[in-house]
Each structure stands twice: as structure tokens, then as C-alpha cells.
Length: 87
Image (tube, rainbow, N blue to C red):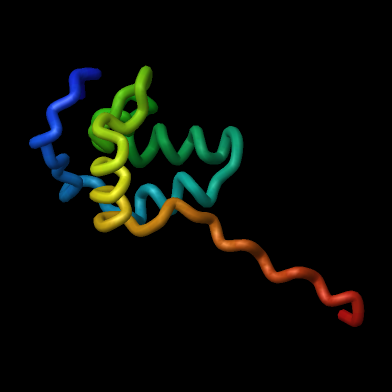
């Protein structure tokens, strides 16, 4: 992916299953790095698979984010339930 903007470009994510990204999001620190290495082959490869830029992020930001949300869903980690003081 280049840092050039081409508004007609629609990235193909067919080789990037959502489950791989969920595994990365589920890890923290060295655990997440290990998942990136195992599932994607490193940071450069995940950047390439997600058709983004290490310097500028998502190219064509508004449309790029919308397309990614359609393919992968929202980039959210669900909040855990608060602990009940009576448990």
C-alpha cells in the first residue's frame, strides 16, 4: 500500500478473516505481538493485509473506515460486566 490517495480504490480483505484480528485485539503487550507474528508474519504484513499506511493510517479516511466497518464490524472491545459487591 502506498501513501497515495486513490478514492476509487476499494481494498480486498478476503484473505484477512475477522477472527485473526479478534485474536490480536484479545491480547495485550507481548501476547499481542506474538499473535501478530504468528497469524500475520509481523507488523509490516498486517499493515499490508489491511491496506493501510504505517505513516498515515487508513488512506481515504472516511470511506476507508466505513468500508472496514462493513467488512469487520466496529473496532470495539466489549466492556466487562462490573463486579457485584454482593458476590
